[in-house]
View 1: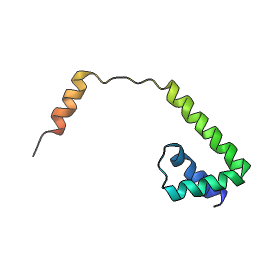
View 2: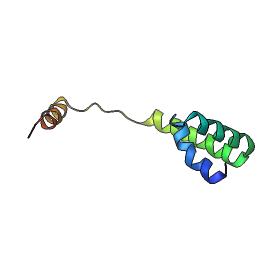
View 3: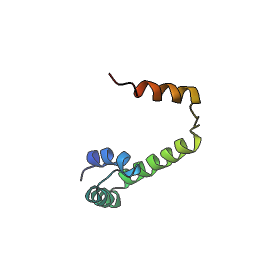
Length: 75
């Protein structure tokens, strides 16, 4: 695997979206490439920071009811 392909797979890896084969290939590349390994660690840290700081807001009941009503209309 080259660095370009590794960069493409990193985000999917962080989200747990790789196939077992892709995980293995990426892990092997990261073991051999210090630049990509550092990039991967930075990407994981960034995702953790974003996850910790995101503010989750519950949608108002009226909005949920409106969406439910509109999506249940049949033509």
